[in-house]
Image (tube, rainbow, N blue to C red; front, side, top):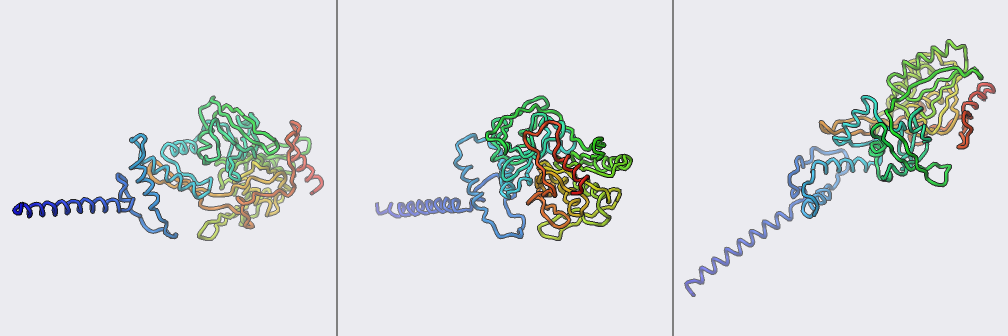
Length: 406
């Protein structure tokens, strides 16, 4: 036994060393930052320093590590989809309904939409006071035919409540194949209970402009339904038609106009506002505002004009209406506008994903934020819910303005 004692001592020492090494290895592994314990992820290192206070990103990696180690569900998880979801959540955290991340499938749908026609209900929607809201149904669209009105709050799309949906998610759920049905539960401020509206989707072609004389009053009406690439040329032809009509009274109807191309609004404003005068300001976070000025076409500069607006007048429509109001070139008649005055830019994140981010806000020539307040009309006239078909109190008030001058 005495001869074996050194052997046992050596054996015990080796076991102790091995145990210490194993414990040290385990302790070292378990003590590593969670980011190092998440495997199969590229580019975990920080690519530079942002000009903000440092943010502790460890909770993100800890949550990911816990899910990797303990989640009991299907092991065939698409980890790239987890990244897309994380980015979507991060963008949503900014609280801006118009900044949206597009994963591959959504980016493909978005690219298709901006290139051509799409199937849907034909209503512009937005987020208003945290509620999904109809900005404006397009003229002649399934939404208009089904009775949707500007200001209607959409509570549910088919079986999905809208509380937690982003704007883009809501749009994607409302759109669908031509001939298919979508059910919306809406709430209208003038009604006690929500109602269900069933709408058959169709191919949506965004209308642009109509121009004609109102024979009974002698007032010429130009109705702009949207601001497209073609709007400046169509408006130019409408101006010529007005000048040839012999009328000296013009109604510019921007009701239920959800906006569109900002450049079209500047171009149309140039028919009313003297050359060089500011039409709108583009305000950024970290530099001076850009000023957009009239090109001074001049043909309508001295024409008495009434501008009809309502809750469905938004974005580029508000830019044009605000410029005419503040320069004294048009009297706003109707209801307070929607209040959507932000600028978005598309940035590719990868070859098949992109980010639409709000980079600036539109201000009126005098520096008023359109997004914060919308535009208040000079003469406020609301159309009652029980308005008699064929009657237009706002247009009638415009005719009265031309006659009485106030």
